[in-house]
Length: 448
Picture 1 (cartoon, rainbow, N blue to C red):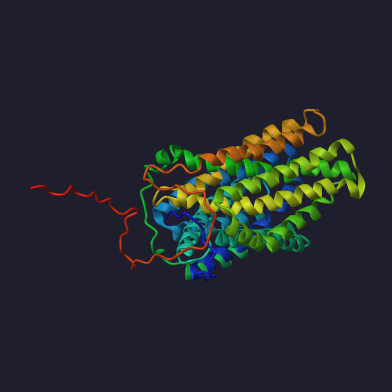
Picture 2 (cartoon, one colour; picture 1 turned 180 degrees about the vertical axis):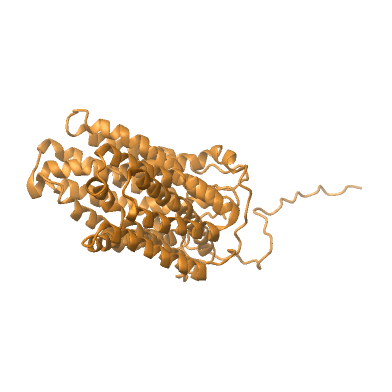
């Protein structure tokens, strides 16, 4: 499954399975984000939870989802994606239905854990198969990162539409929002029962045991996880550092909604052109490097403007610059990191590695966010926290130098080449080609 370049030749159409998986990501996010943005307020007002308990419940959801992605990925490798995706949809339907009627703390916690674990099942299964299909798409002459970019656009569009749907239904009550979210997953479940194949051609099932030991010794993959975790930690500042900066500049956080809308619309409208541009000019490593540099520059913009202490509409300009640069960096980093995993994963364990990418990076975000919160509250000069945050993506660039390490099976080396047009092999299918012709030595002339 390795490849030295990601082609940019003639456009290649998506297979029916790829189209289904990309639409699945859209539907997943519409259903999920129709509920999640309104959960904290519901828990505080309707259920009567204290602030610390609301934070604990939201943290449990994150842990049961992001932290257990590695479990869902391993199950997908063992049993195939169909049973894992279907089980995840059933659990998500049950979780949303339970949450809509939950009125006690124990019931809310149970429903939230069910909702999180459902995503830990279906998300790595879908993402790993999209990554595998993207490699096959590339081998057919297409561009691997374009597939991952389409997947990202679909998810971002769902994250944009979902809250609008939830806000509309919230005029009824929160239970209606939850039941609508469950209804979307009923449709997803029905579609996958009908359309998702029993066995995906070319996907080999492996035993559960043995894969984790190889993974923790795969230094190239762990380096990618850490670099991706640094990107996610920086991206998480949209919700941690940015609200304080917006409130300082304008006196409220109402402008956050507009900044988030700008970010979503940028991804939906510009992701594919950015991916096409990068695919023709940059290798995977260089694409991630440019993306991380843009993210670091976003933090630097705010750091440089903080001493001026601008307020009002002008005070929002550094925040807007931060959001735009961060989103541009995201458009380069996210699809590339996902498309890199198949080249570093052990044969047959792409689900495990896809899940581990999310779990390890999620742990980095969890630990890093605690440190960031302390940093923002430490009373340092206003520019210092933003300068330190700018150093995080820059430090991640150094980790990318270790991502070409091959796996113990000899796979995983991704050469640092621009992604030029692929050339098809001249040999017939099934013909084995030696990487180098044998060297023939001349025999000395026979002397009589």
